[in-house]
Image (tube, rainbow, N blue to C red; front, side, top):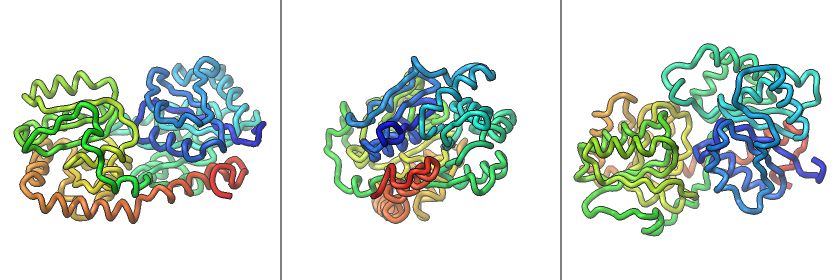
Length: 383
């Protein structure tokens, strides 16, 4: 903190724009000039979220100066990471792909003066969507021993942290994802999604998701395909599954699909959707769902993580078993047939977002936790 501002190192599993990245960037933008940031991605090619960082944020991406988060475990590699951490006031790590950094902190913090580390777990990729890997569980139990805190956004992850990773109550912090709900109140411009042409007589189903296998967007295509004469689909996001999703659409005879890629600021376009949908194999507390609720949308989604408890009570009947694509199709058909139901569910979801998922609460909790870890009250927020 040579110039009085905290210097924060972020270790990400990947930095394409998804839920955890959107939240991290939002917090960085809100801290503004109060902090300096260095961001490392375990996949240096996955850096799409960097475009959402405000231009006035003091931020760098020192992949050429710091060790890689990829590679076999080894004391030498962990020592190099520990040495790199010494130049920072706080280390924030995110998901399994950053766990080598957490282990480096665990091994060398007793011997070296290392800053506090706070780890964040937001969910699992396809390889752990159905069952957590025992070796990774054991690794987490050991690595997290020296962490100042473990942050989770969902009740399900909190249960895993305590019961599977054996973390004490004092270390685990559940902070629900929040957004600027008021920003979603204004109707979006009709051209807010580039290249989108509304098909007359059709409702627009939309989703925001990284185009990754765990999001199972091919499932969403298949579920909508039987109703393709009444529905069109927009998938906002980028990732390696783009060609596979379009291939599934062709195979399903569904031509009315639009993939505009990454779009910043969802409050500007989510309200264009008539229905919001998630088709993931694994989620915990998806920010995109909160954004859709704030925009007043009814939701059709797979029953993963905290999704069922997040939506309004009346919307829970449209949260379907993960593998039941017929149930998802039926949920879409139910909304298609009943405009009044769409309106009522959207209003109920909007009310819940307004009362439970406000960004101010999330900001306050994160700022307090980070400031306590650094021993710098008011360094990021307040005063």
